Image (cartoon, rainbow, N blue to C red):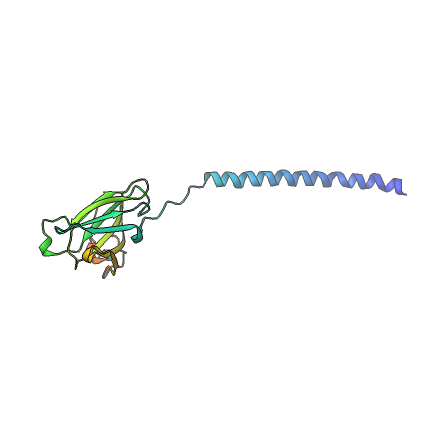
Length: 177
Ligand SMILES: [Ca+2]
């Protein structure tokens, strides 16, 4: 009885080990597939950003405000940064809008802008086809302070003061291509 059951058990055993092997191979295939997806997947691009805590302003004393960014100030590193002073009739002819390219570490500057302590300065990260407003600041007495950027009536993320088309939500930023 025992000797007749043994071969039956081993016959049943064979397909089961084949199934195990097939499962193992399928598992390997799945792992390879997943890892190949991991290699192929393109990392998401760094969203444009500027970090106020990495900004530094200084008053030169002759009506000039220096604005510089420490490493990490601008993302993605290498992007341009634009600083625009709020309009002021007394500033005509003075440097009220300047742009710089950030380094590989995200640092930039110094930019030398006209300094009107009561005026707001707007920071944009400038990409090839997009201007992204990030924050506004004032620098009364050279002291850097993040402030409210004011109204944005078309709700496109660019405050009216620097929006090239303040009533057109499809065009944001101070440059209208
Ligand atoms: Ca706007």
